[in-house]
Amino acid sequence: MTKYHIQGGKPLHGSITISGAKNAAVAIIPAALLVDGVCRIENIPQISDVTLILQILQELGADIRTVNRTTVDIDCSHIRNRQVPYELARKIRASYYLVGALLGRFGWAEVPLPGGCDLGGRPIDQHVKGFVSMGADVDVRSGLICAKVPGGRLAGGQVYLDMVSVGATMNIMLAAVLADGMTIIENAAKEPHIVDLANFLNSMGANIMGAGTDVIKIRGVKQLRGGTYSIIPDQIEAGTYMAAVAAAGGDVLIQNVIPKHLDCITAKLVEMGVEVEELDDAVRVRRSGPISRTNVKTMPYPGFPTDMQPQIAAVLCLANGTSVLTEGVWDSRYRYVDEFRRMGAHIQVDGKVAVIEGVPALTGAPVHACDLRAGAAMVIAGLAAQGVTEVDGIYHIERGYENLVGKLAGVGADIRTITVPDEDAKSQAG
Image (cartoon, rainbow, N blue to C red; front, side, top):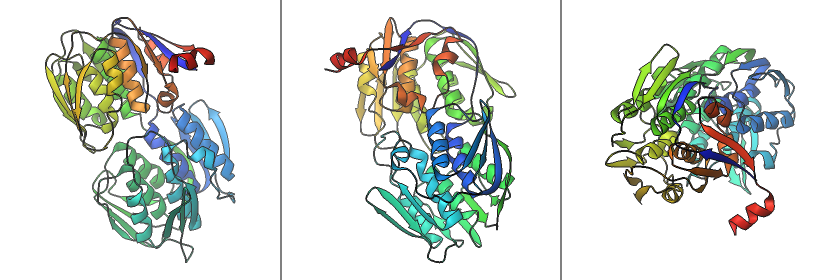
């Protein structure tokens, strides 16, 4: 059993370079299934979710060649196997993008229901609605999403999403790029990684208009050709390190970012008394004084991202006064609250609202990463806390953060990975 061991109370100083966006990479890599030729994808993050999705493509018969640490060549021209491996797919939420990609290319897909973080009900009904609007028959049975086009090729359709859904928006885009005719997605999500997926597909010959707005139009083309594409920097990774500086104090230059993507995070940190200086492709974050209380509500982009909710909660635990945090996207994203309470935080949760009464200091404790972003929040709390914090369940964190320990240690954090013998882990669990 591996854990993060953190000796808290050390301000952070130096620079951190942000990796490619997880949420873009796990959609762009399956999108290579639609391309006839070699896709060279650059700025790929070294995280376990990416490793899994590449492994799934290999199992399907893709030819994948590693060019360097952040670049791969993917050739899906000769794929014949369309059976997605059950054990791999159930470990990753983004496996559902394989439905749109396989349906778009072959008119047939059978993909195990996805895994990933447990954030309450995360239905795929909006994905299904989109596929059906393009002429697919879709059935969810025995843990599988089974989709088939009677005529063999999807036809353009019009779909109004009942809720703003990032996953459904991207999945419908994937299915539509090779369909006959025009597909229109209304009430589409607008996140940066949706724009990135559209830019990738367009660079390979697709015809997608309006990505980044709430109406996306996809005119189907006969074929996509290979090419080279570089994934955008990770908005949530950057925001996580911004929150870490806010909580622990210090002065850190966060490089390889698109500052515009961070506007909603920057605005809240500035409200809390953190200095944020925007540069061309970097932000400098400084905090030496007290943290002020504020209210935060998560919303679809360009609002405050739900994937930053636990991390901002860690900062609010140390703010002067009482803050109100409202979750506007998922039903069940406060499972980490008991872990913060172990460290001395004062948090009360009622449904989607958390009331956080700031404390002068948190105290190190053994805590558990119950999901990806909650795990990052545990690390932030540990960096700011007095004493030692040990975080277990770190496989969740490594799904979405490349070299978290190395990057934090590089700016002065006392953090390392330790291995606990299984017998000790069992006795601690008992």
